[in-house]
Length: 200
Image 1 (cartoon, rainbow, N blue to C red):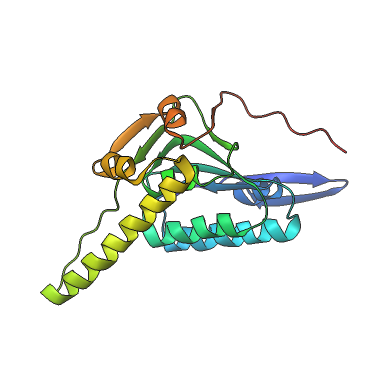
Image 2 (image 1 turned 90 degrees about the horizontal axis):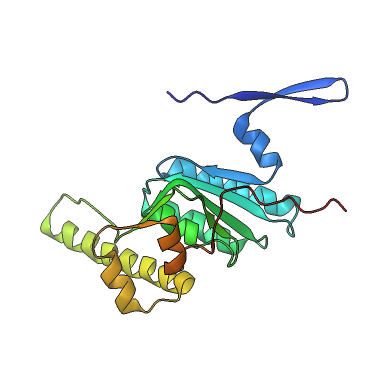
């Protein structure tokens, strides 16, 4: 069981306790720190939609430390990132693998970051299917469609041709932060948090 820290926020004479993720959300920070599941995706999608309703012109900051996970859950997050009007800055801390790497690359161009010791990994979707021969054929067709969809997303966000994406994702392709920058998955390798914008 994961222990979630609580913080105390003081406003005037009032004190309010909130979990750390709720406090980060106040600063427009969304954290993807586990494998990507339907439950996580629903939470992240809700946070993104909420932040857009709060201020559609302010950036959302998505921090990623994930080994990947469900492709369909990841695509729900991806589509919402593209759907909202806010710019979405993405940051890799630790690792962004599989769907985690796709979400990292999906940030607004020029606002995709990784810390120096981050590891990024892309590959084709993985699946294990049981059932009748017909069921396996149905799932194989869907699996192929998902693979093509992920390839198109990587093409869009890296600028590489299909042939290169297919070759590079045929097996696990690990990259350092600098290599991910050269590849086009991120725009900057940073050691320190960006300076906050001046207060109006």
